[in-house]
Image (spheres, rainbow, N blue to C red):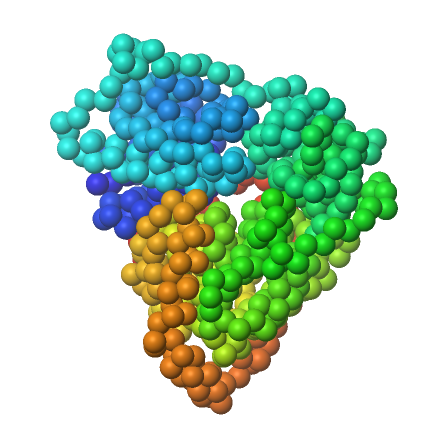
Length: 570
């Protein structure tokens, strides 16, 4: 079937719907539609049999939804209506939620229901939930709705039916006065729900050290205590703040812009506070000790027999130069342990999206910071590529992009949760790329496919990634089960009789490849191209980076989507 995806942005869910529908044989077009006129033009241009809107903030015009069946993905169960469904679900502490695919009508979220799928709500941030359990439920519901539409025999359920009418609940947007934290009165559980409900956007508006900030993300702390509202310590760029009955870690802050000022963006709390931050004790937490604590740690290490798991989780998958250096130090420590299998990853949500564009944008010299960041992540990838005394597994519990994909490809095996989406390309940011991709990507998928993936710059679903050799194993599990499943499989691999012979063969093969062409030559060639982009003020990279960081939406559908082939799967 020919399907048109209309979306306000080509976000993670839209990318997954695009990739998985294409993998099933549908021809799929995408239009990023800012308004009704653009939607009308898109329908005329593509003449779709069906319109699906995975993430649309604008109303579909009446003439469009009467001419074509238009299905809206709503991140709430049947009857839920309003623009802040997930925000309210997380802040209210619900443990079960759902996703509904409904037909567009004049009243928002009130159309007939084509499909609905339930999902659990674990204690995670809204953005993590959206990319995890909600994404899984949404994809299942979309596929069910598409099949029902294609059959021509299904009659969607109107919300006026008694069975659905009783569940109708119209709820407005969640205002900042509802999100406000009372540090003296709110218990830690309430503080965490408020922070998690706003972890990506809009953040929780608060006052700290005499200034107004949006707080992004929150994590519990099990030991530190103090006067409610007071800052207690720092750790890896985050600050710990006391609550009425405990404390929470705040990883990122975003300054509230003054009227008329441009939008601001979130940075590590210590960086954002800058000179305002009083002297505070650093509370370091070695990765190998983090597993026994109910506290925030963006890098953790654990072992099960001869298998080690080095997991990490950076906001949005962005890895600054400092993050890469800390992860490299943890990786080197993990290599001193008596294991035969080392897993890199294994956490839920985003694996990595490569260098941290926000940290670069905020730097006094973005070119120099870009260079520092790319060399730091290259050092990390090199350490993985040159590990010859054990097998390395990259375990992707969620999406990965650009240098994050190439970090994974440095491992001997890549394991991927079935809901992940990979973007193995750089050109949308005006970059050639590094992280040894010119060595690892063609070796994985072949030169022709590597050229196609990097040129077209389209998302690759997990099933397609397995089919073309980008990954080696799909884990058919939910986000919450991924870590345990990875640890169990890694322990089994470490016990497998063939593992030690593989390690011996790996070392010999690495020596043969190095004799043919050195890894250093790949790195030098890539970095020469990157240096040009970083230090040339006319390079498109600088404008594209700034637009991304400041969330300046494109005027319409990006050219690479307009030029995409009719079939989305590689």
